Length: 260
Image (tube, rainbow, N blue to C red; front, side, top):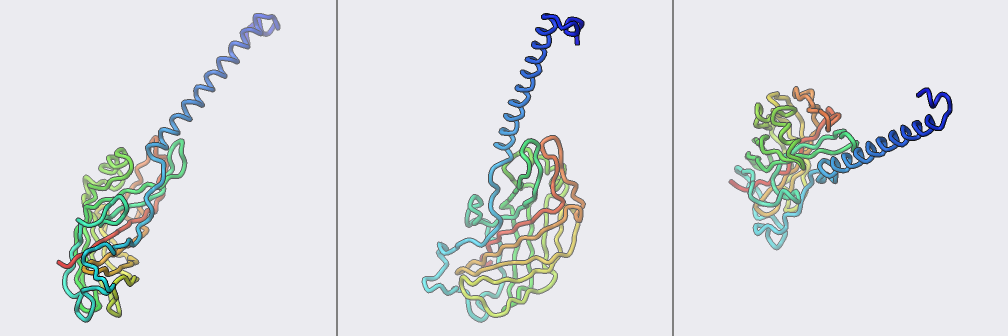
Protein backbone atom coordinates (compact mmCIF):
# COMPACT_ATOMS: atom_id res chain seq x y z
CA UNK A 1 0.00 0.00 0.00
CA UNK A 2 1.39 3.42 -0.94
CA UNK A 3 1.76 6.35 1.47
CA UNK A 4 -1.04 8.15 -0.39
CA UNK A 5 -3.41 5.23 0.05
CA UNK A 6 -2.43 4.98 3.70
CA UNK A 7 -3.38 8.61 4.15
CA UNK A 8 -6.70 7.91 2.47
CA UNK A 9 -6.18 10.66 -0.11
CA UNK A 10 -7.81 10.63 -3.55
CA UNK A 11 -4.54 9.69 -5.27
CA UNK A 12 -4.32 6.54 -3.12
CA UNK A 13 -7.87 5.60 -4.01
CA UNK A 14 -7.18 6.04 -7.73
CA UNK A 15 -4.01 3.92 -7.49
CA UNK A 16 -5.84 1.11 -5.71
CA UNK A 17 -8.59 1.27 -8.33
CA UNK A 18 -6.03 0.95 -11.15
CA UNK A 19 -4.41 -2.05 -9.45
CA UNK A 20 -7.78 -3.72 -8.89
CA UNK A 21 -8.70 -3.28 -12.55
CA UNK A 22 -5.31 -4.63 -13.68
CA UNK A 23 -5.61 -7.74 -11.50
CA UNK A 24 -9.15 -8.30 -12.72
CA UNK A 25 -8.05 -7.92 -16.33
CA UNK A 26 -5.19 -10.38 -15.93
CA UNK A 27 -7.49 -12.86 -14.21
CA UNK A 28 -9.99 -12.62 -17.05
CA UNK A 29 -7.24 -13.27 -19.62
CA UNK A 30 -6.04 -16.32 -17.66
CA UNK A 31 -9.58 -17.71 -17.54
CA UNK A 32 -10.08 -17.21 -21.27
CA UNK A 33 -6.70 -18.77 -22.14
CA UNK A 34 -7.43 -21.77 -19.89
CA UNK A 35 -10.84 -22.22 -21.48
CA UNK A 36 -9.44 -22.02 -25.00
CA UNK A 37 -6.61 -24.43 -24.13
CA UNK A 38 -9.05 -26.86 -22.56
CA UNK A 39 -11.29 -26.74 -25.64
CA UNK A 40 -8.30 -27.24 -27.93
CA UNK A 41 -7.18 -30.27 -25.92
CA UNK A 42 -10.71 -31.69 -26.05
CA UNK A 43 -10.71 -31.22 -29.83
CA UNK A 44 -7.42 -33.14 -30.07
CA UNK A 45 -7.74 -35.82 -27.38
CA UNK A 46 -11.41 -35.73 -26.39
CA UNK A 47 -14.56 -36.92 -28.09
CA UNK A 48 -16.04 -40.38 -28.19
CA UNK A 49 -13.71 -43.39 -28.24
CA UNK A 50 -14.51 -46.27 -30.61
CA UNK A 51 -16.83 -48.82 -28.97
CA UNK A 52 -15.28 -51.96 -27.45
CA UNK A 53 -14.59 -54.89 -29.74
CA UNK A 54 -17.69 -56.87 -30.74
CA UNK A 55 -18.81 -59.47 -33.25
CA UNK A 56 -20.07 -57.88 -36.46
CA UNK A 57 -22.41 -59.04 -39.17
CA UNK A 58 -20.73 -60.98 -41.96
CA UNK A 59 -23.98 -61.82 -43.71
CA UNK A 60 -22.92 -59.85 -46.78
CA UNK A 61 -20.09 -62.30 -47.37
CA UNK A 62 -20.41 -63.94 -50.82
CA UNK A 63 -19.34 -67.22 -49.23
CA UNK A 64 -22.43 -67.37 -47.01
CA UNK A 65 -25.13 -69.68 -48.29
CA UNK A 66 -28.79 -68.73 -48.64
CA UNK A 67 -29.89 -71.50 -46.32
CA UNK A 68 -27.86 -70.04 -43.45
CA UNK A 69 -25.81 -73.20 -43.08
CA UNK A 70 -22.06 -72.96 -43.25
CA UNK A 71 -20.62 -74.42 -46.43
CA UNK A 72 -17.85 -75.79 -44.25
CA UNK A 73 -20.11 -77.33 -41.57
CA UNK A 74 -20.29 -81.01 -40.96
CA UNK A 75 -17.86 -83.62 -39.72
CA UNK A 76 -14.39 -82.55 -40.71
CA UNK A 77 -15.74 -79.64 -42.78
CA UNK A 78 -13.69 -77.09 -40.88
CA UNK A 79 -10.56 -79.20 -40.55
CA UNK A 80 -7.29 -77.69 -41.66
CA UNK A 81 -5.44 -74.43 -41.40
CA UNK A 82 -7.16 -71.05 -41.36
CA UNK A 83 -5.18 -67.87 -42.03
CA UNK A 84 -5.93 -64.38 -40.74
CA UNK A 85 -7.84 -62.40 -43.37
CA UNK A 86 -6.43 -58.85 -43.55
CA UNK A 87 -8.37 -57.70 -46.63
CA UNK A 88 -12.01 -57.88 -45.58
CA UNK A 89 -14.05 -55.33 -43.66
CA UNK A 90 -13.20 -51.83 -42.50
CA UNK A 91 -11.27 -50.58 -39.50
CA UNK A 92 -13.52 -47.51 -39.37
CA UNK A 93 -16.56 -49.56 -38.34
CA UNK A 94 -14.66 -52.33 -36.53
CA UNK A 95 -15.51 -55.01 -39.11
CA UNK A 96 -11.95 -55.75 -40.28
CA UNK A 97 -9.20 -57.74 -38.63
CA UNK A 98 -7.45 -55.56 -36.05
CA UNK A 99 -5.65 -55.55 -32.72
CA UNK A 100 -5.52 -52.67 -30.31
CA UNK A 101 -5.41 -51.22 -26.83
CA UNK A 102 -7.89 -49.34 -24.65
CA UNK A 103 -6.73 -47.47 -21.54
CA UNK A 104 -8.04 -44.74 -19.25
CA UNK A 105 -6.01 -41.54 -18.99
CA UNK A 106 -6.32 -38.22 -17.18
CA UNK A 107 -5.74 -35.19 -19.41
CA UNK A 108 -4.82 -31.69 -18.30
CA UNK A 109 -7.79 -29.36 -18.68
CA UNK A 110 -10.12 -32.19 -19.73
CA UNK A 111 -10.20 -34.92 -17.11
CA UNK A 112 -10.89 -38.58 -17.76
CA UNK A 113 -10.47 -39.83 -21.32
CA UNK A 114 -10.41 -43.25 -23.00
CA UNK A 115 -7.41 -43.69 -25.29
CA UNK A 116 -7.83 -46.27 -28.05
CA UNK A 117 -5.21 -47.34 -30.59
CA UNK A 118 -5.67 -49.96 -33.29
CA UNK A 119 -3.82 -51.60 -36.18
CA UNK A 120 -4.70 -53.93 -39.02
CA UNK A 121 -1.12 -55.17 -39.00
CA UNK A 122 -2.10 -58.63 -37.76
CA UNK A 123 -0.93 -61.98 -39.10
CA UNK A 124 -1.39 -65.52 -37.92
CA UNK A 125 -3.14 -68.83 -38.35
CA UNK A 126 -5.34 -71.38 -36.62
CA UNK A 127 -5.52 -75.15 -37.08
CA UNK A 128 -8.74 -77.10 -36.53
CA UNK A 129 -8.95 -80.88 -36.13
CA UNK A 130 -12.55 -82.04 -35.74
CA UNK A 131 -13.94 -80.04 -32.82
CA UNK A 132 -10.52 -79.10 -31.44
CA UNK A 133 -8.41 -76.04 -32.16
CA UNK A 134 -4.93 -77.48 -31.95
CA UNK A 135 -2.84 -74.44 -32.89
CA UNK A 136 -3.33 -70.69 -32.81
CA UNK A 137 -0.64 -68.07 -33.39
CA UNK A 138 -1.18 -64.33 -33.71
CA UNK A 139 1.44 -61.65 -34.37
CA UNK A 140 0.73 -57.91 -34.17
CA UNK A 141 2.87 -55.19 -35.75
CA UNK A 142 2.92 -52.73 -32.85
CA UNK A 143 4.69 -50.03 -34.90
CA UNK A 144 1.49 -49.48 -36.91
CA UNK A 145 -0.77 -48.75 -33.93
CA UNK A 146 -2.71 -45.52 -34.49
CA UNK A 147 -5.00 -43.56 -32.16
CA UNK A 148 -6.81 -40.25 -32.63
CA UNK A 149 -3.61 -38.22 -32.19
CA UNK A 150 -0.16 -38.57 -33.77
CA UNK A 151 1.56 -37.21 -30.66
CA UNK A 152 0.30 -40.13 -28.57
CA UNK A 153 1.36 -42.58 -31.28
CA UNK A 154 4.82 -41.05 -31.65
CA UNK A 155 5.29 -41.06 -27.88
CA UNK A 156 4.66 -44.81 -27.77
CA UNK A 157 7.60 -45.41 -30.10
CA UNK A 158 10.12 -44.49 -27.41
CA UNK A 159 8.03 -44.57 -24.22
CA UNK A 160 5.33 -46.81 -22.81
CA UNK A 161 5.00 -49.65 -25.31
CA UNK A 162 8.38 -48.63 -26.81
CA UNK A 163 7.43 -50.01 -30.20
CA UNK A 164 10.81 -49.04 -31.69
CA UNK A 165 12.45 -51.55 -29.29
CA UNK A 166 9.61 -54.09 -29.22
CA UNK A 167 7.95 -53.93 -32.66
CA UNK A 168 5.78 -57.04 -32.29
CA UNK A 169 3.43 -58.64 -29.79
CA UNK A 170 2.44 -62.30 -30.06
CA UNK A 171 0.01 -64.83 -28.69
CA UNK A 172 0.70 -68.57 -28.98
CA UNK A 173 -1.77 -71.23 -27.90
CA UNK A 174 -0.25 -73.69 -25.40
CA UNK A 175 -3.32 -75.86 -24.71
CA UNK A 176 -5.77 -77.27 -27.28
CA UNK A 177 -9.26 -75.69 -27.26
CA UNK A 178 -12.14 -78.17 -27.27
CA UNK A 179 -15.12 -76.56 -28.99
CA UNK A 180 -17.66 -79.33 -28.42
CA UNK A 181 -20.30 -79.83 -31.09
CA UNK A 182 -19.61 -78.62 -34.63
CA UNK A 183 -21.06 -75.08 -34.65
CA UNK A 184 -23.70 -74.02 -37.14
CA UNK A 185 -23.44 -70.95 -39.33
CA UNK A 186 -23.98 -67.82 -37.23
CA UNK A 187 -23.89 -69.67 -33.91
CA UNK A 188 -21.81 -67.88 -31.27
CA UNK A 189 -19.24 -70.03 -29.51
CA UNK A 190 -17.58 -69.05 -26.25
CA UNK A 191 -14.24 -70.67 -25.39
CA UNK A 192 -11.09 -69.86 -23.44
CA UNK A 193 -7.66 -69.86 -25.03
CA UNK A 194 -4.72 -70.54 -22.73
CA UNK A 195 -1.40 -69.44 -24.14
CA UNK A 196 1.68 -67.26 -23.97
CA UNK A 197 1.30 -63.53 -24.49
CA UNK A 198 4.51 -61.68 -25.34
CA UNK A 199 4.24 -57.91 -24.94
CA UNK A 200 7.04 -55.35 -24.49
CA UNK A 201 9.55 -58.20 -24.50
CA UNK A 202 7.88 -59.99 -21.56
CA UNK A 203 6.11 -63.35 -21.92
CA UNK A 204 3.37 -64.47 -19.55
CA UNK A 205 0.76 -67.20 -19.65
CA UNK A 206 -2.76 -65.81 -19.96
CA UNK A 207 -6.31 -67.13 -20.28
CA UNK A 208 -8.18 -65.29 -23.01
CA UNK A 209 -11.98 -65.47 -23.31
CA UNK A 210 -12.96 -65.74 -26.97
CA UNK A 211 -16.27 -65.42 -28.80
CA UNK A 212 -16.42 -66.80 -32.33
CA UNK A 213 -18.80 -67.40 -35.21
CA UNK A 214 -18.61 -69.26 -38.51
CA UNK A 215 -20.10 -67.44 -41.49
CA UNK A 216 -19.81 -69.33 -44.73
CA UNK A 217 -16.13 -69.84 -45.44
CA UNK A 218 -14.97 -67.40 -42.80
CA UNK A 219 -14.54 -67.53 -39.05
CA UNK A 220 -14.83 -64.39 -36.94
CA UNK A 221 -13.34 -64.26 -33.44
CA UNK A 222 -13.07 -61.52 -30.84
CA UNK A 223 -11.12 -61.34 -27.60
CA UNK A 224 -10.69 -58.77 -24.86
CA UNK A 225 -8.21 -59.17 -22.01
CA UNK A 226 -7.16 -56.80 -19.24
CA UNK A 227 -3.44 -56.57 -18.56
CA UNK A 228 -1.51 -54.73 -15.86
CA UNK A 229 1.14 -52.56 -17.50
CA UNK A 230 3.56 -53.23 -14.65
CA UNK A 231 3.37 -56.99 -15.34
CA UNK A 232 4.98 -56.31 -18.72
CA UNK A 233 7.48 -53.71 -17.48
CA UNK A 234 5.56 -50.92 -19.22
CA UNK A 235 5.99 -47.48 -17.67
CA UNK A 236 3.02 -45.22 -18.40
CA UNK A 237 4.16 -42.27 -20.58
CA UNK A 238 2.84 -39.22 -18.72
CA UNK A 239 3.69 -35.56 -19.24
CA UNK A 240 2.33 -32.01 -19.45
CA UNK A 241 -0.84 -32.99 -21.30
CA UNK A 242 -1.30 -36.56 -20.01
CA UNK A 243 -1.32 -36.35 -16.22
CA UNK A 244 -1.82 -40.04 -15.48
CA UNK A 245 -2.58 -43.37 -17.12
CA UNK A 246 -4.31 -46.33 -15.48
CA UNK A 247 -1.99 -49.24 -14.70
CA UNK A 248 -4.47 -51.68 -16.23
CA UNK A 249 -5.26 -51.52 -19.93
CA UNK A 250 -7.27 -53.72 -22.27
CA UNK A 251 -6.01 -55.60 -25.31
CA UNK A 252 -8.67 -56.05 -27.98
CA UNK A 253 -8.63 -58.45 -30.93
CA UNK A 254 -11.04 -58.75 -33.84
CA UNK A 255 -9.93 -61.55 -36.14
CA UNK A 256 -11.28 -62.82 -39.44
CA UNK A 257 -10.02 -66.20 -40.64
CA UNK A 258 -10.28 -67.80 -44.07
CA UNK A 259 -9.35 -71.29 -45.17
CA UNK A 260 -5.68 -71.30 -46.10
